[in-house]
Length: 341
Image (cartoon, rainbow, N blue to C red; front, side, top):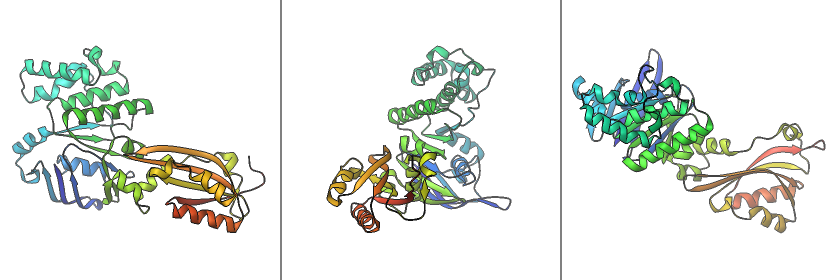
């Protein structure tokens, strides 16, 4: 569906994209994640040639659009819609007119426009806001208008540029649910850029990680979880891992004692299995579970535990060995001193 081959883009002396090769399948939701300045937005804008790469090719649905004339490119862009962080609605137009705008620009008959808008309003749950103006809408409602406007010309691809960054968590959930619904109902290929791993794990089938204009990782969520050297995996677990409360973090020392504090990362069957109780019985070791979290990424269940052991150095080494044998990742956070909690 979308094929990027050897894309390069430079702004003055800044390399924004370097030798980008990427294939995005039809009807999938593909996430692109990275820090600010990694090149995410530039890459997204190269897909519809709002930014022209210095070199390389952009192939959409089998057609190389980098070599099209201006008129042919405008026609090709009808397949590619885009939604933005700031909504970009016309404040002087109603919800109906904002959604209808792209169709009117294309010269579509008003009867067809009315039919299409009335079809989209229930989808984005804005039937009662049909005649409202943007100033009368919440942020989430404005983004729903923007999504309906993007769908008005029946695109095959929807590009989302940090589409949930300006929204609160509850509204973000509803917008992500809407995007998943659109993908399921219409089979639209969705490319979503974000800096939030929580967004990726809720909606994406595959993802690419960008850094300094390079794609440094490209895989499905399930395969990322299974690779312990994966950067995306570390980001996923960083989002999942509970933060130590000050009363606990302030009591930690790097000096070894018999109270090591460990962080355990579980995945797959091990995330829900009785590993802790079993190893406690087998090693005759006291284990206090202080913090825990569990979630699902794609089809994989993942969990994080922060535990305190009552164990000397030899027992700690045996515990860690058992964890690694069971395919658990172990991180030693330090040693709890007597002034704990």
